[in-house]
Length: 138
Image (cartoon, rainbow, N blue to C red; front, side, top):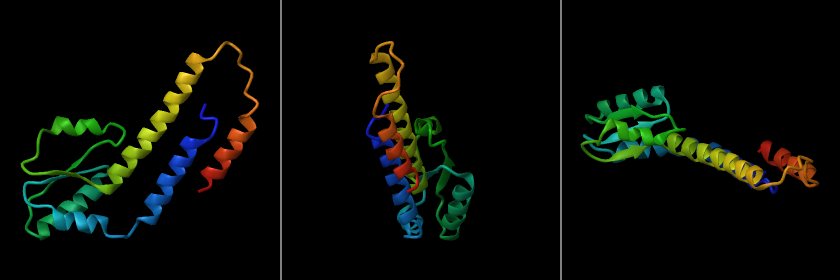
């Protein structure tokens, strides 16, 4: 158990960043940076298709692929791009969110595996729930 609610706070921070960075031109900047032969990896097929069309309208032959953000290593199954491989900001944000959630689960597993048989909830559980409630609303 993350007694201090750090994982919940980090997840809230990621949500705040993601929301506040909307509409700042990250996708536009990426499209302006790529060249023919490059690859962009997305979390969403609709966004991949939208960006592919934008690149085509600029005369660029850019490969747009989709990878599940919970398993980004699968991008390796697609081989190497002719040029550079870039990751769309949404995919990167979702990869971070999955990694934080996975780490929170790992901490729980480690704590349970290292604890004794007493299953009485810890005294600080009320404090933990208060921390979670504070950050879940962000």
